[in-house]
Length: 66
View 1 (spheres, rainbow, N blue to C red):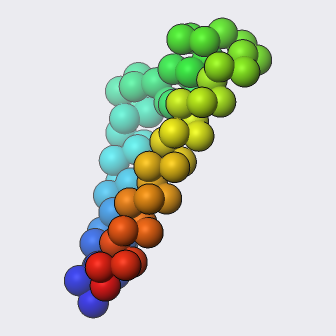
View 2: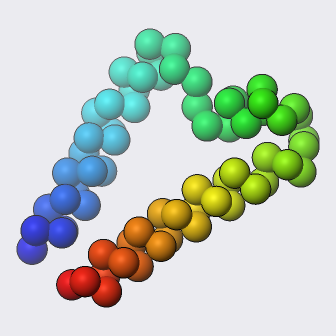
View 3: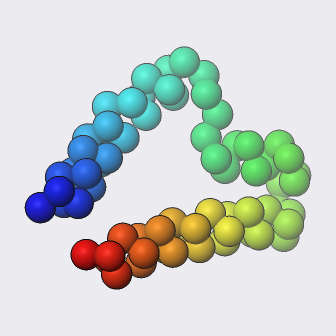
């Protein structure tokens, strides 16, 4: 039950915090990638895949421990 509560709290925090960050002018991940690697660069794929892989492995680890 605790992990489901953390999941729901994470979604709620994201829904509440992200609009404030957007209004404060904090750039999104795609804007940062575009500025670092340039428009349409294939090199921007690697940090994105790395981030997706880290999230996937973290979720997998949490599910295995349950």
